[in-house]
Length: 163
Image 1 (spheres, rainbow, N blue to C red):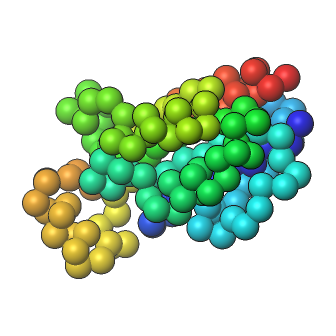
Image 2 (cartoon, rainbow, N blue to C red):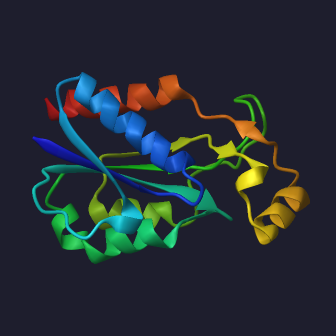
């Protein structure tokens, strides 16, 4: 069983989550490869998929959405897990409730086994002018809020289903 872990990311934080999921699968004996969604050209050679995206203004990035839509027929014949990255702040802070706006449709499109939302990372030094304006307007907290234990647990759940 070979698993492709792929994600769309603007500033690398979501790619790092994909890397951690792939590493967690490998540690549990699952053959996993990781590739950025923005560079993916084929799904050949894979038996299962973990697809993620950074979330901006409540939506997945185009590269991840387009990957799901473009390869819908292939993905519906395999187990697929989805993940989103984006809420910022400590776990007890107020975060948007529910899934990103377009995720329900993506879950239905590929008949996903599961979807998880992981907190993200905000490093203002990596942002462009427009992104900085939005961050200031919504008073987004800066920092790395990713929960690596939760991410690894997700990898463990996927590995358990596949083995």
